[in-house]
Image (cartoon, rainbow, N blue to C red):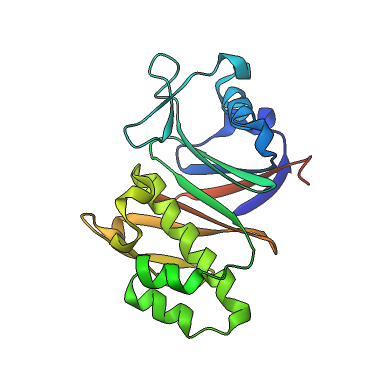
Length: 214
């Protein structure tokens, strides 16, 4: 994984078939989808207002069929003051971002929605490590579900994450071959946790940061 500070117009034309571009940018909820549309426009060579999106049956935003639907696939996530946008050709990326925060219901949520092994692992951690570990699991699961195109309605209990915090592994995905999936932790900062997933062969991840990131 490589990390750069750059602007979209300078790198959009260099999206390789063996790469995934991930953009990290400052975000305010009042912006809505404006940053996403601007980014997609940079990759399509179009103004943001020309970008048309539609939604899959499970609510995933897609490029409209009549507007470059086959150009690439994308996914995005935002949390508090930052957003992540993943763009790739030939595969469907899933990305998830969470800002670190106290999570008093981490264990009850894990016991109800995670696998028994995942919940036990969280219970065994010291209190000061549990919130981050919970969000690392959560973002990994969300990234896989978003790449699957299903979202939380699929069920967090139907997949399990193993491996280390720095190198998570999809251990099980009900109805699918887990070993055909790629799952990566994104190196962000001390205040955010991010994960990226896709079905297919390994790819080079290029993590770009907009120059005006807060």
